[in-house]
Length: 217
Image (cartoon, rainbow, N blue to C red; front, top):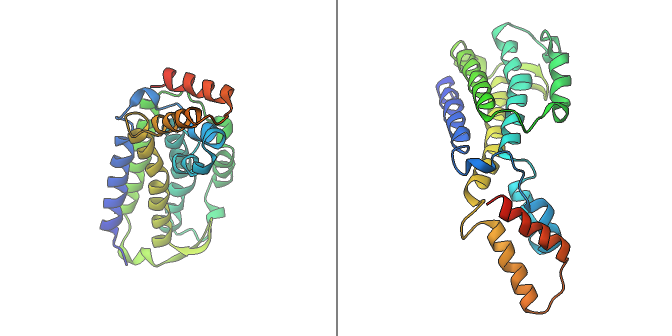
């Protein structure tokens, strides 16, 4: 079984890794990937690209990570720190659940990135402080959680897995947005090959795609 020190390291390193994705190609942080729209119409046999990158921008993904960790992950610590036996008994949790479930209503792409970074860092700091108050004996202790009766070890692993899931897409967007190996470049080359071969394509969609890659280099 993992140790508290292990999770302290994981919460710290995944925080740093997620924030690092924001430093590469920063001008497109709040722009949603174009692949979900254009791959389906122009390169349907490679539609997995849209799943690979997702449909949310890095800005939106960071907002989602904040929502999950603020409203779901962080409150779970109270089960073990305060001796609460059921997630539904955590004070204010019903309101937090409602906010999390309606996060799409509250998301605003105009929120300054620095504000999101500061909030994410603060939430991780609170989680690290909570971890330092726990012992290895807590890890196997089971409580009634959002996911049923399970251990602290499982809940902590779930948060790390969630960080990897969305952090990976943030890295993919940061790395493959532009350059010779970028998906927009590859998609453009694919369509040019189709046109050269005399095949018909949806030109209105293609022109829309060209406009996109010009305005979001």
